Image (tube, rainbow, N blue to C red; front, side):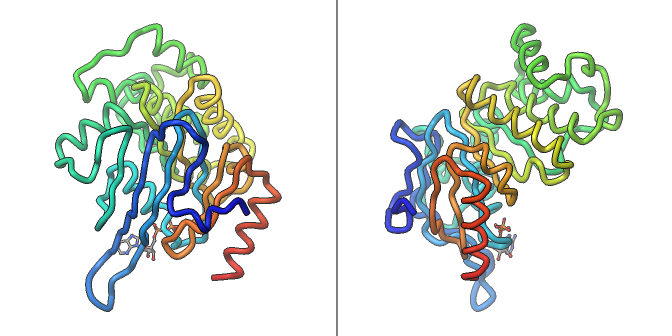
Amino acid sequence: MNGWKRQRHNTVGTVTPAIQLREVTKRYGKGPQAVLALDRVSADITRGTFTAVMGPSGSGKSTLLHCAAGLDRPTTGSIRLGSTELVRLKEAPLTRLRRSSMGFVFQAFNLVPSLTVEQNITLPLRLQGRRAERAWLGEIVARVGLTDRLNHVPSQLSGGQQQRVAIARALVNRPEVIFADEPTGSLDPGTAGDIIGLLRQAVTDMHQTVVMVTHDPVAAAHADAAVFLANGHIVSGMASPTVERVTAAMAGLRGAA
Ligand code: ADP
């Protein structure tokens, strides 16, 4: 292990963080029924890196992602996107910030069924009253391999193609960070590999920052770093994860649970 357990602030890399979490606690419910989903979690996510968030079921992965993305509010603690403190923002500016500066890829794709591929991809821009630059749209559509599908609707696409639409939609804003929640959870292994490859390219070729919750060691092995959660704590971190090391770390966490 590389000392993550003992660090007060977990840091992936050395440059300015895209996201900074400090002492983030999330409690659901009150009194004896309360669940402490996150317990004073601190972490830095470096710009231009791909981070996998892993841990047993119920360890707090989704809660961490949702809080970091401003989809849920922590009970206490600080979450910064660049220099902006999310926990102080009211709902409307937080929604605007999500639309302008974050991209999302979910397990269930979350496309709008009645919109075409192109309309789904450009939706984050239209919600901000902006138009897509044709050259940029053409580039991302080509990158995800959907150039000949722009006028289809989601029901005419395979799961893998739908997730490509979601990735293009996440990229269209040139966001500060892309959050991916089990992006390969609904896909067969071959298609999953293609989707992880696209997220990897977004980081390597387009200098995006990706934070991905996954339970899949094969997916995590494409990341630059993995962080492991257990019982609402970050218990360890791993640079340059491999399938074998991630599998062993997960087995250790399950054994300890
Ligand atoms: P993971 O994504 O690692 O499976 P979650 O973040 O979903 O874990 O959940 C962490 C803990 O918080 C679990 O004990 C879960 O039951 C609890 N939890 C999550 N969401 C809620 C909620 N809306 N209300 C009450 N408890 C919740």
